[in-house]
Image (cartoon, rainbow, N blue to C red):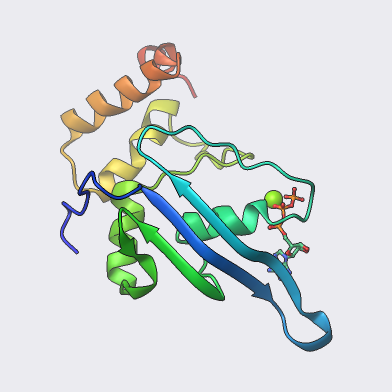
Amino acid sequence: MSNAIVSHQSPLVELREVYKVYGTGQAKMQALAGVNLTINRGDFVAVMGPSGSGKSTCMNVLGCLDTPTSGQYLFDGIDVGTLSRDQLALLRRNYLGFIFQGFNLLNRTSALENVELPLIYRGLPAGVRRERALSALNVVGFEWLGSSHAR
Ligand SMILES: Nc1ncnc2c1ncn2[C@@H]1O[C@H](COP(=O)(O)OP(=O)(O)OP(=O)(O)O)[C@@H](O)[C@H]1O
Ligand SMILES: [Mg+2]
């Protein structure tokens, strides 16, 4: 997979009949039962449901942190199930981002540095990293975190 996988034609995210089964035998638990989902570029989507309904399981699949038991996950038309570990790592690094409920920020670095961190793995130079991190903070109204280097 090259870095330029985005074709702008297929939906960005597509789940087709996705099942996820945890455990075996008596302990078997079907967390996802044939989920079909299409998310297009620019869509803003909330996954809602009662506790235990499979939201986290679904997010883990979408974030390429876990694989479905059966069914297909297409990211920009590419069947994620066919990607190697390295290709999956590239997909996560270049296209997927997480904000966890518990934040999972690094305490010893500033807010700005936390935002910049994934861009280090992407190999971007320091100046570009800072610029992008500041603009990302700006988008969510947190630009003051960048200017004060707040912790
Ligand atoms: N690693 C696992 N092993 C076994 N069963 C699991 C595992 N993870 C989740 N489950 C089960 O799968 C079902 C879906 O769980 P999931 O965590 O996806 O639900 P959720 O919608 O995120 O719930 P919550 O709102 O409580 O976070 C639940 O019955 C849960 O007990
Ligand atoms: Mg959950």
